[in-house]
Image (cartoon, rainbow, N blue to C red; front, side, top):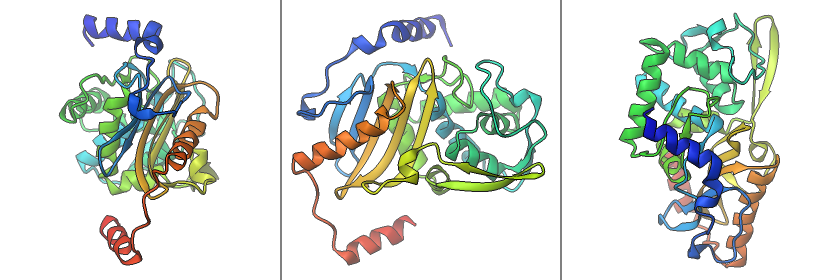
Length: 293
């Protein structure tokens, strides 16, 4: 990261919330609590809400979507066994993990835990096991970001623990679209839970997104949560509600439920504005689902 980029990140962390506090006119009466947000209709590209959408800020575990993209792009064998090592332990934030050093899981299982349960050691292991090691992996993450047009994004690690790993809501919209094109990534992010053998125990891991585990209003196609003290609570989600295909990015939310409540506010706003789309005919919907499967 060059000096100018470091200065931008520092200024954003200090003052980012006040740089662009006005939501777009298209938002109408919609008011969201997250400090940065972008809500887009996937089918039309219409921006339904924007707030601080171009402000650079830490993104925490949303990073793991890019980690998964780099792994899938490399076409590495998903059944290859990887082992958690001391190099995968978080020595920056000292976060805990249910994967002790010596845990052996397949690459596919590591990616599932990184995306579904946001396991930091799994994400770090994936980057270390990449050809050329972690340094080559990080270079590929940033190369991929540039190729997607994520011009205000920088990845300093594969788990999102570093406050130098930053992006914007608008850049993350591009990342969500790229991740959505990968079937395994989509599937892993919305799996409610998984039971895996960790050394001698069978452990059940659950999805970090409560809306995946207990929700009736959204048909969630892809999602990822994130949290660090610097980033606040974050959420990206691509889902259908009221027959509208919506992509949402919420950054720097405070309070455990704020980002999920913001998703609820989006749905209520669409309902109030009469912006629900008519349901597709059953035959058309079946054909779309068949194509997407």
